Image (cartoon, rainbow, N blue to C red; front, side, top):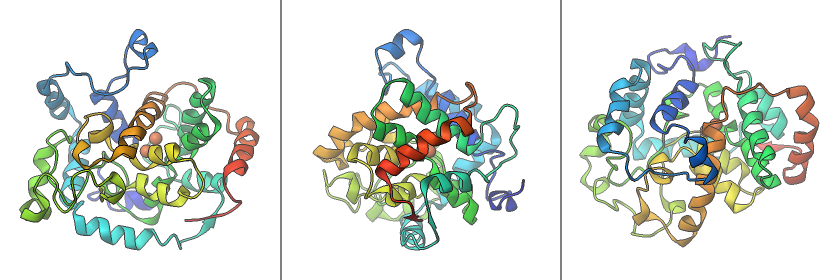
Length: 303
Ligand code: FE
Ligand code: FE
């Protein structure tokens, strides 16, 4: 099925949005079972910078092109414009399950036999959390975490919906994947935006920091009155790999961010490593999720 994300191929080079996530998995491979038991998520201190760069060399041309566009066009002004455009939440009113079904229309050039639909990815993430005995709000957070990808259905290019996120308005960390592509970003020529703190104050807190625009911020804003703070951090920063995996940007964080980081890190493996296992049975699972949704969310939310 065609969708707006595919209408302009040059703007959206990925054959499937999941090509981005596949690339994340080559950069952050699933730890061996013994490691996973220790629940050791986060940066491996022994990982050499060299090895990191090789992932870039091995990236598919479509992924490389995707990051080139992302790094070039995600400027401070672009982020402000998108916030203005979308965060009024005046597009439509939908319940959470309805939104998941709506998002499920998003079909890329995927193989339906092996690739998961959007709804299947949400259910799989949530089910993995449930099997691990995680709290109900966290299971629900897993179920909603990628609903912001519906931005694609409204004609937004892939590079403005997915991709590792990073702060705008201050210097780029060299731990952001493909940092060389920032030379084409007009912000890199603006000295105000290129100091360590840029337009921000040391320790101001991530809430004050503008992050490159995408599905994280959008779903956070939709859900912000309904989920506990820990879940909201998971939504808002799950693609902020430079922070939760590379330990960058600590100088912009406050006490609350430092306390919440472990929750964002605890969520990441459920998002990244649950794909490609068994397909969830949507019909069977629906009643459980409808109940869970009703516990936290109103029947309709603003999108
Ligand atoms: Fe996501
Ligand atoms: Fe996800």
